[in-house]
Amino acid sequence: MIYLIAFLSPLFYALSVLIESFLSLDIFKKPVTMCFYASLTNALFVPLMFYFGTPTLPEVRFWIVYALLAIIDIVYLCPYYIALKKTDTSVVSSLFSIGKIFIPVLSFCFLGDVLTPLQYTGFFIVISASFILNMKKGSSLKINQAFYLMFLSSFLLSCRGILAKYALGSDGIWVNTIVYPNLISGVLVFLFLLVKKFRPDIRKHSRSYMKKFPLFLINEFVYFVAILCAIYALSKLSLVISAAIEATEPIFLLFLVWLIQPFYRFQFKELNVSFAKKMICFILMIIGIAFIS
Image (tube, rainbow, N blue to C red; front, side, top):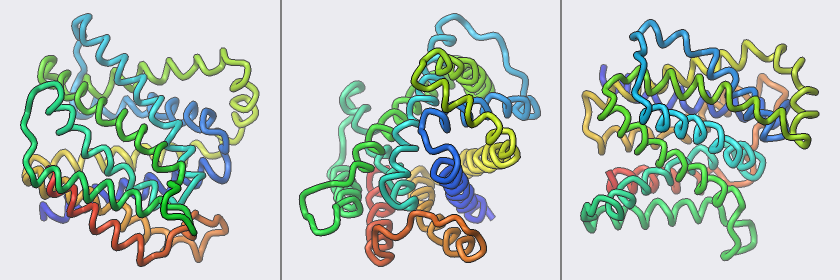
């Protein structure tokens, strides 16, 4: 049963990426606009957390941490949504795995933790597979821009993970770590309206947002379930097994695209990289992540 729950996490993560791909490619084509409405919906989803516990009033130093978490929650979305326009959705999904390499590297740089030869091997496998996935057709040297965008996005998420771990270890209230960053990010995104360049497109898509509001809510619920499954699985399984299972997300995404696409007019971006190449690289990345963890 625990393995079933563990595999539900990448499945729901993949479904969330698929929904966001549809919204950002077919409707909210400017990344900032998509980021604005996605962050706004996150904040509206906060009341569900009260089912799991009541947030407490944190100390001033934790407000700073929660504000940083909120900023990262907004900023990482922009390169992610741009990357969705540059290459296949499943490839973008797989590039979130790059973030797995940053935590042990940061631990080595700032905490002095010694990396094992197996971890170095894992780094090499993950980066190599990512490069191969993003090599432009007809070129062995040029890398698709999506790789660099997701490298930035994954790095930001790794920093977020370290900050969240600090907050959890010091504040001790896990509900706070979810509620306050989401509330703060829901307020901060209104700063986009102060930027003349962003304001017209955000206003233009306000009606589209209301029409697609149920889909935004579904996406947030799906993402929430994915997080719960991941946390529960991590409490029962080793970090190595959990990390490797989470890395299967792009494989689930390929399956969902194959399942949905014949019944829906929207054409998901899954034609730039061959299926065989994707599967080989995805499997290599799963192995590499297992080594790193």
